[in-house]
Amino acid sequence: RLKGIDFSQATALKVIGHCAFQHCESMKNVSTFPSSLETIGNGAFRHCTGLEEIDFSQATALKEIGEGAFQLCESMKNVSPFPSSLETIGYCAFGNCTRLKGINFSQATALKVIGHCAFHRCKSMEVVSPFPSCLGMIGNDAFRHCTRLIAIDFSQATALKVIGHCAFQHC
Image 1 (cartoon, helix red, strand yellow):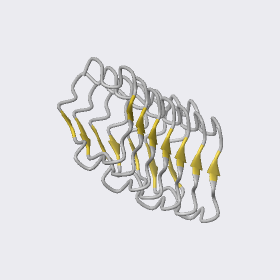
Image 2: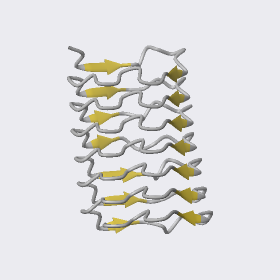
Image 3: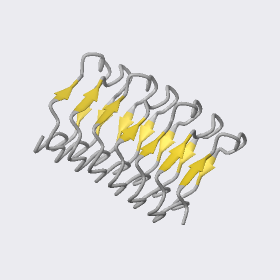
Image 4: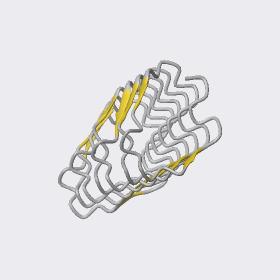
Protein backbone atom coordinates (compact mmCIF):
# COMPACT_ATOMS: atom_id res chain seq x y z
CA ARG A 1 0.00 0.00 0.00
CA LEU A 2 1.09 3.53 -0.83
CA LYS A 3 2.47 5.23 2.33
CA GLY A 4 3.65 8.60 1.04
CA ILE A 5 4.44 10.74 -1.97
CA ASP A 6 7.38 13.03 -2.65
CA PHE A 7 6.85 15.20 -5.72
CA SER A 8 10.03 17.25 -5.18
CA GLN A 9 11.73 16.02 -8.37
CA ALA A 10 8.59 16.15 -10.55
CA THR A 11 9.63 19.57 -11.83
CA ALA A 12 7.38 19.56 -14.93
CA LEU A 13 4.19 18.49 -13.10
CA LYS A 14 1.44 21.09 -13.58
CA VAL A 15 -1.76 19.20 -12.76
CA ILE A 16 -2.73 16.42 -10.39
CA GLY A 17 -5.94 15.19 -11.98
CA HIS A 18 -9.37 14.47 -10.60
CA CYS A 19 -9.41 11.52 -8.17
CA ALA A 20 -5.72 10.77 -8.94
CA PHE A 21 -4.96 9.37 -5.47
CA GLN A 22 -8.49 9.03 -4.12
CA HIS A 23 -8.95 6.32 -1.47
CA CYS A 24 -5.20 5.77 -0.88
CA GLU A 25 -6.08 5.13 2.72
CA SER A 26 -2.57 4.06 3.88
CA MET A 27 -0.91 7.26 2.68
CA LYS A 28 0.43 9.30 5.61
CA ASN A 29 2.02 12.32 3.92
CA VAL A 30 2.48 14.26 0.73
CA SER A 31 5.79 15.98 1.09
CA THR A 32 6.89 18.77 -1.13
CA PHE A 33 4.53 19.50 -3.99
CA PRO A 34 6.71 20.79 -6.87
CA SER A 35 7.11 24.46 -7.75
CA SER A 36 5.59 23.76 -11.20
CA LEU A 37 2.24 22.52 -9.82
CA GLU A 38 -0.70 24.80 -10.75
CA THR A 39 -3.80 22.71 -10.03
CA ILE A 40 -4.83 19.98 -7.63
CA GLY A 41 -7.93 18.46 -9.23
CA ASN A 42 -11.30 17.63 -7.77
CA GLY A 43 -11.10 14.73 -5.33
CA ALA A 44 -7.38 14.24 -6.03
CA PHE A 45 -6.66 13.05 -2.48
CA ARG A 46 -10.24 12.53 -1.30
CA HIS A 47 -10.75 9.92 1.38
CA CYS A 48 -7.04 9.36 2.06
CA THR A 49 -8.00 8.64 5.64
CA GLY A 50 -4.41 8.07 6.83
CA LEU A 51 -3.06 11.33 5.39
CA GLU A 52 -1.66 13.38 8.29
CA GLU A 53 0.11 16.30 6.63
CA ILE A 54 0.67 18.09 3.36
CA ASP A 55 3.45 20.48 2.46
CA PHE A 56 2.70 23.39 0.13
CA SER A 57 5.97 25.21 0.91
CA GLN A 58 7.49 24.63 -2.55
CA ALA A 59 4.23 24.87 -4.57
CA THR A 60 4.90 28.43 -5.69
CA ALA A 61 2.75 28.19 -8.86
CA LEU A 62 -0.31 26.56 -7.25
CA LYS A 63 -3.45 28.49 -8.19
CA GLU A 64 -6.29 26.13 -7.43
CA ILE A 65 -7.17 23.42 -4.96
CA GLY A 66 -10.19 21.70 -6.51
CA GLU A 67 -13.49 20.55 -5.12
CA GLY A 68 -13.10 17.92 -2.44
CA ALA A 69 -9.37 17.66 -3.15
CA PHE A 70 -8.58 16.65 0.44
CA GLN A 71 -12.11 15.93 1.65
CA LEU A 72 -12.46 13.20 4.27
CA CYS A 73 -8.75 13.09 5.08
CA GLU A 74 -9.78 12.41 8.64
CA SER A 75 -6.23 12.04 10.05
CA MET A 76 -4.91 15.32 8.60
CA LYS A 77 -3.47 17.49 11.35
CA ASN A 78 -1.15 19.85 9.49
CA VAL A 79 -1.28 21.88 6.32
CA SER A 80 1.79 24.03 5.74
CA PRO A 81 0.94 27.66 4.90
CA PHE A 82 -0.81 28.05 1.58
CA PRO A 83 1.45 29.52 -1.15
CA SER A 84 1.26 33.14 -2.30
CA SER A 85 0.07 32.03 -5.77
CA LEU A 86 -3.11 30.30 -4.51
CA GLU A 87 -6.29 31.96 -5.81
CA THR A 88 -9.07 29.45 -5.11
CA ILE A 89 -9.87 26.83 -2.52
CA GLY A 90 -12.74 24.83 -4.00
CA TYR A 91 -16.00 23.47 -2.70
CA CYS A 92 -15.43 21.15 0.28
CA ALA A 93 -11.68 21.04 -0.47
CA PHE A 94 -10.84 20.19 3.15
CA GLY A 95 -14.32 19.21 4.31
CA ASN A 96 -14.47 16.68 7.13
CA CYS A 97 -10.75 16.83 7.90
CA THR A 98 -11.80 16.27 11.47
CA ARG A 99 -8.32 16.46 13.06
CA LEU A 100 -7.12 19.60 11.27
CA LYS A 101 -6.21 22.06 14.05
CA GLY A 102 -5.65 25.33 12.23
CA ILE A 103 -5.22 27.10 8.93
CA ASN A 104 -2.64 29.76 8.17
CA PHE A 105 -3.47 32.08 5.28
CA SER A 106 -0.59 34.51 5.99
CA GLN A 107 1.29 33.71 2.76
CA ALA A 108 -1.80 33.28 0.54
CA THR A 109 -1.59 36.81 -0.84
CA ALA A 110 -3.50 36.01 -4.07
CA LEU A 111 -6.39 34.09 -2.47
CA LYS A 112 -9.71 35.42 -3.73
CA VAL A 113 -12.20 32.63 -2.97
CA ILE A 114 -12.72 30.15 -0.17
CA GLY A 115 -15.44 27.94 -1.63
CA HIS A 116 -18.63 26.66 -0.13
CA CYS A 117 -18.04 24.08 2.63
CA ALA A 118 -14.25 24.38 2.10
CA PHE A 119 -13.47 23.57 5.75
CA HIS A 120 -16.89 22.27 6.77
CA ARG A 121 -16.82 19.93 9.79
CA CYS A 122 -13.14 20.42 10.59
CA LYS A 123 -14.12 19.73 14.17
CA SER A 124 -10.63 20.14 15.69
CA MET A 125 -9.91 23.50 14.06
CA GLU A 126 -9.19 26.15 16.65
CA VAL A 127 -7.55 29.00 14.72
CA VAL A 128 -7.92 30.64 11.30
CA SER A 129 -5.23 33.28 10.80
CA PRO A 130 -5.20 35.78 9.07
CA PHE A 131 -7.48 36.06 6.06
CA PRO A 132 -5.50 37.83 3.29
CA SER A 133 -6.29 41.33 2.05
CA CYS A 134 -7.29 40.14 -1.46
CA LEU A 135 -9.91 37.63 -0.24
CA GLY A 136 -13.26 38.58 -1.74
CA MET A 137 -15.53 35.70 -0.74
CA ILE A 138 -15.97 33.11 1.96
CA GLY A 139 -18.57 30.66 0.66
CA ASN A 140 -21.67 29.26 2.26
CA ASP A 141 -20.97 26.83 5.09
CA ALA A 142 -17.20 27.34 4.60
CA PHE A 143 -16.35 26.82 8.27
CA ARG A 144 -19.69 25.44 9.46
CA HIS A 145 -19.47 22.96 12.32
CA CYS A 146 -15.87 23.87 13.21
CA THR A 147 -17.02 23.45 16.76
CA ARG A 148 -13.67 24.17 18.47
CA LEU A 149 -12.93 27.36 16.57
CA ILE A 150 -11.88 30.04 19.07
CA ALA A 151 -10.12 32.66 16.89
CA ILE A 152 -10.68 34.10 13.42
CA ASP A 153 -8.53 36.95 12.11
CA PHE A 154 -10.26 39.32 9.65
CA SER A 155 -7.83 42.19 10.37
CA GLN A 156 -6.26 42.12 6.90
CA ALA A 157 -9.37 41.13 4.87
CA THR A 158 -9.90 44.57 3.33
CA ALA A 159 -11.37 43.26 0.03
CA LEU A 160 -13.83 40.84 1.65
CA LYS A 161 -17.29 41.45 0.14
CA VAL A 162 -19.19 38.25 0.92
CA ILE A 163 -19.39 35.96 3.91
CA GLY A 164 -21.83 33.28 2.76
CA HIS A 165 -24.84 31.81 4.48
CA CYS A 166 -24.01 29.80 7.59
CA ALA A 167 -20.28 30.31 6.92
CA PHE A 168 -19.40 30.07 10.60
CA GLN A 169 -22.56 28.46 11.96
CA HIS A 170 -22.11 26.15 14.95
CA CYS A 171 -18.61 27.41 15.69
